[in-house]
Each structure stands twice: as C-alpha cells, then as structure tokens.
Image 1: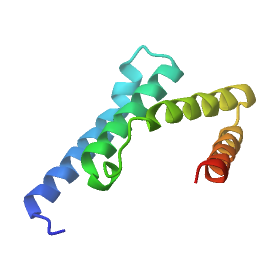
Image 2: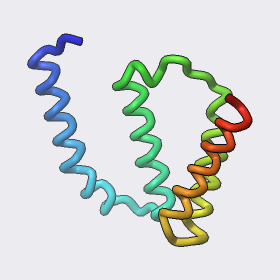
Image 3: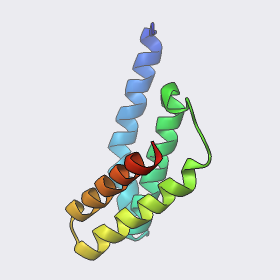
Image 4: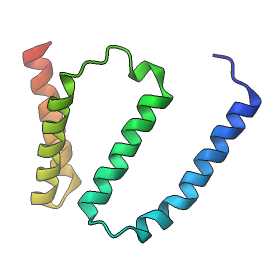
Length: 103
C-alpha cells in the first residue's frame, strides 16, 4: 500500500499528541480503575477498527456478546486473583474451548 509523506506525518503527530496527553487525561479524570480501563479499551477497539481495514473483514455482530462475556470473565478472574496470570489462563482456556467445540 503506497503511503503519502504528509499522511504519515499527520499520523505520527496525532500518535505523539495522544501519547503525550494520555497521562494528563487519566490523572484529570475522576473515574475508578475499572471505568478508566473500560474507556481506554473501548477507545483502542474503535481506533483499531477505524485504522486497520483487515479488522473489519468478516465482521459479525454475533461475536460481540461472546467477546463481552469473555471480557467479563477475564476481568473477574483478574479481580479475584489480583494477577494478570489468572486473566491469561481464562483467556487461553476460552480460546481452546472455542477452537475445540466450534471450529
């Protein structure tokens, strides 16, 4: 995919501004950790969908409830164990079960 120099520079400046102001925005917000993490995840998901055309190929709205349940269970595992490992194991088990039973 050919790229234009101006478009690349604009993307670079936009990324730099967002990266620089992200910490200030997090400190200024009066949200709890869970609320802030949810907002940041939502923004990241929208940015990926907008920026990467291959993420929109094969899009199916039936995946949304499944992804929401997986996110809930991974979050609950993290909250209960206070470790990212519990969330990773939950995700790995869910992916394994999905591939075993649905593909």
